[in-house]
Image 1 (cartoon, protein in one colour):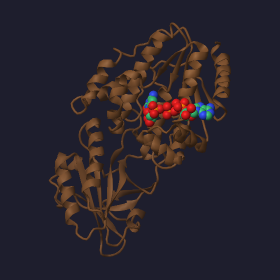
Image 2 (cartoon, rainbow, N blue to C red):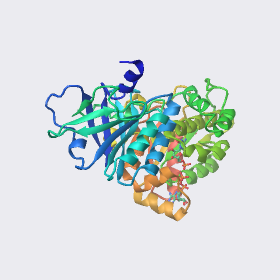
Image 3 (tube, rainbow, N blue to C red):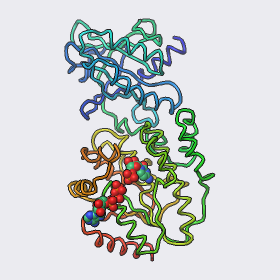
Image 4 (tube, rainbow, N blue to C red):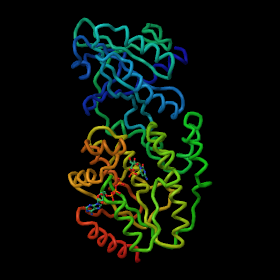
Length: 420
Ligand SMILES: Nc1ncnc2c1ncn2[C@@H]1O[C@H](COP(=O)(O)OP(=O)(O)OP(=O)(O)O)[C@@H](O)[C@H]1O
Ligand SMILES: Nc1ccn([C@@H]2O[C@H](COP(=O)(O)O)[C@@H](O)[C@H]2O)c(=O)n1
């Protein structure tokens, strides 16, 4: 087999494929010989008239793959016939870090195959996207997979068709495999490299790069305590941080820092790899400001690394809370080159009270915050990830009492833990 044909087969062979339907994951793999297994559930349950396809983004560097994956979704949703259903899909080597490739699984119920196949052919010629179609064999519940040639048409020249067979759920949920340095960055250089690579597609990346400190080399520890206030939207961070600043004569900083505000909306529209690298770098700019202010006064920080990591992990991990990496996983470690605050306070609030405060405030929410509102599961994943992050001293505070009572409690904690 030619090198090109081998690379085309690679995303499917010796790998497990996962399709996500209504929050549940269905696993299957491919095999050249059939050993009497029944078809995987996602095939058995497909409607009789359904034509099934899979698409995986495989070529190029990770920035190109991330951009292509996001654009592919937009294209599919915009251009596929309405009777074609799109679900997230991935290909991975079980429990092997960084092995995840992302794509989509299509169930086409439209009358004619032509519009869908025309689009898929076009995509497989234009982009680093590999396409497979599936065929139900006449003699019962057996399905085969056919890899399309790079030229797009479903020809038989690339490889033999293979059978699809059910596969066990892996120990580590596939959506956790690529978190490190794709969703969460553990060093300044890793995050900066992503922005370096997307300067040609996102002009704002250059402006961010110009604002970065020259490096994240170890600085001397600030003389004064550094206290970070964390929590979901509308838990009272702004109210509390301003009161703490006044009560302690402290400096108040935030992450992302003010200087990144003009670029933030643009990065919020980018795929996770780029968006998360932006927020990760924001922490290093804030860290530099903390280093300076912390020589003069105590420093209060509104959001920092916990926010960056917890939101990123909760978004990357699909399905249930139990799919999150277990407590103690390296995913939750603190970046070795990032300043550690003296204390991190997480404000927690019952969802109903948080919603009440949000509606009283009546301000716009980010897409992610809207998601938090109607997606209780996502909220739970963010809070769980917050609590699992290790590094600096961490304490959870119930933010439901009055603003003054919360302030008094946090002041007590700061005095006890930071000797202020
Ligand atoms: N302890 C409290 N009791 C009642 N209401 C509060 C309390 N703390 C803050 N609020 C009110 O709740 C709303 C949200 O508070 P705040 O803006 O401080 O939250 P936040 O965590 O900073 O939100 P965001 O992350 O979106 O900036 C505001 O209207 C604020 O006045
Ligand atoms: N250090 C940070 C701060 C924020 N984020 C992301 O921003 C969103 C919440 O920010 P607000 O200003 O609205 O409070 C949230 O979606 C986080 O993803 C971050 O990553 N790192």
